[in-house]
Image (cartoon, rainbow, N blue to C red; front, side, top):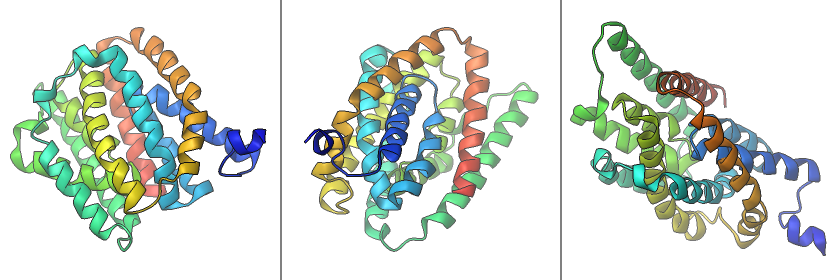
Length: 254
């Protein structure tokens, strides 16, 4: 009886605790330690399979976004990213249409390479004392929206793209976190019915597993928020850059 409540997917308890750890890590990520949740994508994909793992991860992301906005909703700068939304929605639609046919490993490799290129450009501009704001370029904004929406739907892997886009704006860390949470929550809520009724990767059993693990997500947001409060602005920027690079590397090796 207890197992059917706590472990509705009937996985081994080892996998159950690994999933619990992934829930905690997503809480950490959503509350400010941006990007570290990328490590959970290959982990969940390994134990649950590609499409099923995206359905398990998505509700964790939504729960984490909601908890993050509880702390940072006043810091969100929606006007900074509203130009991305139409293109991100187009990327999601494209992913829904080809999601069961596309070889997403090739796509992930392309995204990772482009992320490395964009990071290199930011470093070059930083060394030259200039500001590289990707939002000022319409082609780059369109690319960020399309590829981010596609990657978000295919594997919840849009973090490096959207975080890099926000990072280039040089928002203060509180605005960076709040704006990202607001944007991600919007996209993730749009994706949820598509995962439930089109791909059927979100089921009642997987939602029950998500519900059981809400305390781990919440604890992660509390711990992450506390850690972020001690990180200076400049160090936070370096932290995000490093995690984005690691995330892109994970996309290459997944």
